[in-house]
Length: 119
Length: 119
DNA sequence: CTTAATAGTATCCTTTTTGATACTATACAA
DNA sequence: TTGTATAGTATCAAAAAGGATACTATTAAG
Image (cartoon, rainbow over all chains, first blue to last red; front, side, top):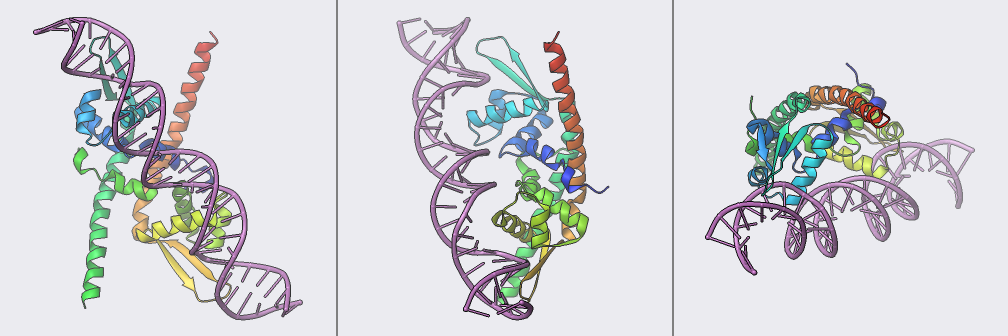
């Protein structure tokens, strides 16, 4: 398959995965199935409430995750990946694999450079 | 495969694909094999020289593309995908496919909403 | 009456990204 | 000597993204 650059839909997928936090959030939800807001906040170190809310809303808008509110006090809100959201799975897996390999690639490049300089 | 959120390498791949222009640039190079700076500029509508240069440098730094300078006047510089860069191919293809489907998904969602409102 | 817990908002500030525009070097051609 | 083509830089401005912090609503427990 050749993708016509003019009709490129890569950005559409990209737009959903991009953001400093979205991949980690997705991986957490994929791993645990369902997480409360506070659990996610604990599990994603360094994220602020504002950012977590924002990323979750955006993912929800794209039907990637589902938000369920329990009418309780104190509030309870659960997030989970939708069936549709699961279709991102292979992409995340492929990117993770590529990324893992790329880390090695960069390391080798760095070592080569270091060796050359010391010779 | 379950990706451990803490060891997530998705960002690494993401970092390389992200930017308003990178996917289009890559697709152009994949389609045409080799392109001069000015050809890319023509083919990627709306991009500024600064942005094109920046994106190309970043892709070059990651070994995704190669830059060949011909010592001529006026200058001639050719860009092409590296062998290593080709390894991004399946990811771009997967994202494009997903994106294409997602466009449909969003459209259906929109139509459903419109129907509901008019009833 | 006060405090605690949860899931947020609201506001302001900083950093990063992107864009517009002007400028440069060089050799050849008219 | 002026203009042209190519592949850039440099500088400043605007916009987008991200972060810090404070604040809110609600109910039950003490």
